[in-house]
Length: 194
Length: 194
Image 1 (tube, rainbow over the protein chains, first blue to last red):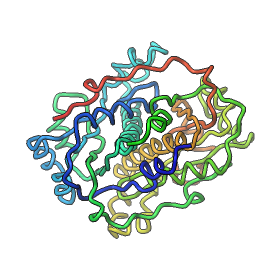
Image 2 (image 1 turned 180 degrees about the vertical axis):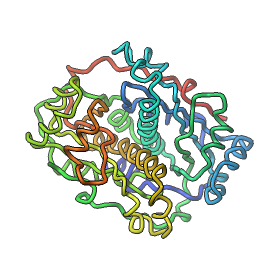
Image 3 (image 1 turned 45 degrees about the vertical axis):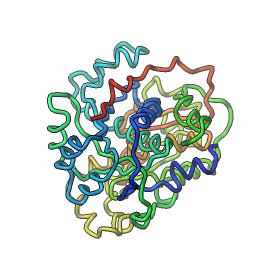
């Protein structure tokens, strides 16, 4: 079992932030996040998540034009905002990623429903690993779904098979700007043991 | 930043297991997993994941009848197998879970596309938190997508608005039964910094 400090860093005390301290995030930290999260399991090791770390003022302006009004200011002030995308041609990499079964590509190629559900499920799982990994390297997160997906796809993934899943700012949160923490369902509301 | 031991437990050394040591998992550990993962962020705090921990021989038999042939034996021998489901009526709980905005329920009610994509994205994110939380409490995981979803829905969620997302065995892995670890994409293949 992890020690209490680690459990607090990852889950118990970690919060979604709305404001950011003036402290930069290094490229090295972004690489550390990926080098942890990449090991999280996905079905047939398909790892469909593709990440654009938006850091420069020019790239950030492009992203702000795609965000819902309520998310613009907090995205502008974040040191980095990651776009978590999903590669809808992930199956082309399976011969390399899943050598265990040479047929894996054929489970998906041409099967739109299998592609879409596998890309969405697994890139979201990887999004969960991403958030936990960012916290593990000492950063705070602000995941967001409030944006115009078509605009993000056009601005950042045009001409590629990648489509946005969600967006997540990274930095050092300003705890003075936190809202009250939302309640959670009790174990017996969300779970049963049978 | 978490210490090296924790990073190895969560990501660097953690593996998807195919075989299990003969060591039980307690109900208390299942509650610990939920009491960590429940704090992970979801959009509008919607927390759509619903979990059935399949533990008794009778419930396990019902589940085995839904699994693909290649997953039956490793599911049979696991101390517990969790069914990670998603509540397609999650929005009914938003007035309580997201008091911040009393309109949140209306973003979803009657909007099938918004319900489906939000339930799938966020229950998968929570699936990522679940896997990391299980590892944090000292357990090994074996997530699986190889099953008949209709059969699981009928056997475990009949008459409810919950639908299966994926399945994940829990226990203490038998490292002698591990396959070679699959490769991962390099940072520059999966990410860019702009």
